[in-house]
Image 1 (tube, rainbow, N blue to C red):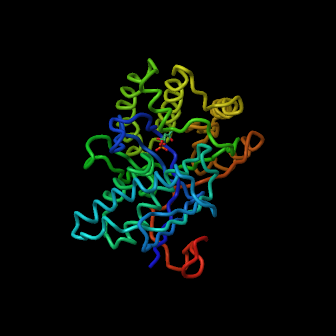
Image 2 (cartoon, rainbow, N blue to C red):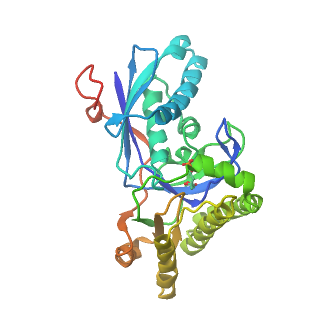
Image 3 (cartoon, protein in one colour):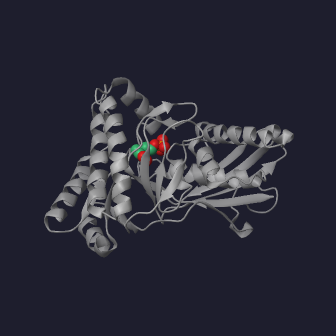
Length: 336
Ligand code: PMV
């Protein structure tokens, strides 16, 4: 059998940066994001009869590091399956084929969609019926932000214990996100490594965690109130405070490039002209502009000289696709 699933990336409004537990992938603070309706990852998983997992990534064999991250999530799943009365599951292995529509590693959150799609496809291939909260916790073990890509629309990912730390949907004002891709280059330093360095060396890390714990409930309240302006202000602040903490590392880490700052400045200029738009950026040089549906086209036009723009609305939850969506070719083929 083969199971295929699709998940979309998400962009955080209140950022996750720093872990309370590296092994369990528990965040130091909660976060809030919107799942996008562009750049999906599609992942097919099929049980094999071998004693190892294999992975094809965007049509080529996965690197050892990529495979190791997938295996880590699968190990958690094998444990869950064993606990749920499938004593053989500890020895089950799979072939994975996965394809990202987003530029991998350039700050467009392809790890979030990737691990969410893997969690959903692998759980179904194992015959396990996991709840959305359980799938979110499983996806979290691959990449923290993947916990949020299980959920459609706006997602709140809770900090806390393993049992508490999953994402759930919250109602929010209608938003559009305009991603301005300025670079498809692989980022120099992974978010995992940079989070470690920030926690270990940035004098602002403690302040970052503390301010996130204050901004998160305020952002959730703004969502409940349908208050786009307040949500936008908090989102931009969260991004700038995260990057401030990161830049203050020893040695410093720079994710934002001159053109990134131009796009952030553009948001401010547009606001002065009465357009409700706020900027955010993840661990890379690309910037995402957050606005309301009414202004999406205008904002995209204003940014198009600075990068490749795409407009996204709220995307769907991660889900299993029909068998015809399989990325595996004919029976027994190793490649897509
Ligand atoms: O889950 P990771 O390791 O991809 O970390 C994501 C970190 C940021 O994208 C920078 C922030 C966030 O909340 O998505």
